[in-house]
Image 1: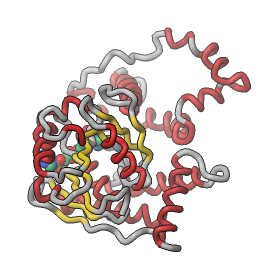
Image 2: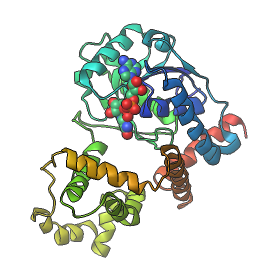
Image 3: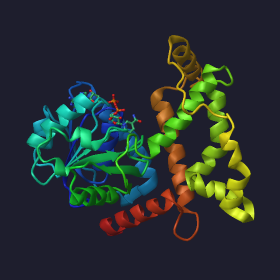
Image 4: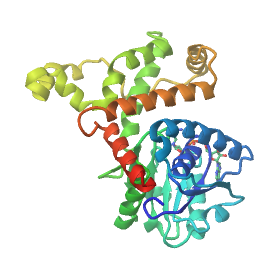
Length: 334
Ligand SMILES: NC(=O)c1ccc[n+]([C@@H]2O[C@H](COP(=O)([O-])OP(=O)(O)OC[C@H]3O[C@@H](n4cnc5c(N)ncnc54)[C@H](O)[C@@H]3O)[C@@H](O)[C@H]2O)c1
């Protein structure tokens, strides 16, 4: 039992919905998954197997008995008796509104209803809902069962208790709920990611670099820094003893130089799509998606464990892992 929730519904079981199902189930919570795609159940089992592999490395025998993962035939069947509903259907406002209205009409009165949207505003999504006060955004990161951040965003009609309850449930799953102060399109993390993504596409478009070279530029350098200190603390250190003030003095002026194309968007015409997709296929060097996911997960486990060993109580995501292990140890009585 986590955050007082014994049963959850996951509506939409693609990349993100099945990741949520795995995180809930491996924290001992029963999951009912609804997805109209007949292959959704088998896909969710594959994701669950990946997640089990990662959790056995992270938590070993401390893990609680996993919750059951069951496939529902309708939204109503999935949400019946659920204390928490996580919607992860495709990113289209009309579809989200329709599915959330269906969830709102069928879910128990006390259930929190969270949407995984990457950037739609909760105020727009809750418009046609009965009980909009219990709806908010809980925006996760792929793979949901390993990455701790979840951006919690309230809409105009969301009740403050809903934010508190959702944050408590996510916290109980070993996640880091980041409650947004303002409701803005794309929230915090996707604004940052999109700025970099747009720039990366320009570099391919202009023939400056291949997708592999751009990834190398990140993963051999600032990607390693970002995982543990983010951007501001990293730049503080780049300013030497004089810190952030010196960094801003030194590099502030170049922000006005035309280094980046942040406000322009490259046209995603066939030529650019072919270039990015073909180079990406070559970059995979014959590894399947499943194989790449396993490599990604093993690397993430290693990074999380390294951060856990930093200092007396761990650092950043590693401190959170340390707390999650402690909680599991206490629950398992070991
Ligand atoms: N992929 C990511 O990295 C990522 C990260 C964070 C958030 N998100 C958000 O999560 C949501 C889902 O994205 P995804 O990447 O998992 O997409 P996806 O295409 O992998 O999965 C969507 C699933 O929803 C199902 N679906 C369609 N209509 C449905 C309905 N009426 N009821 C129930 N299920 C339905 C589809 O069959 C599919 O399995 C989107 O809002 C997206 O913005 C995605």
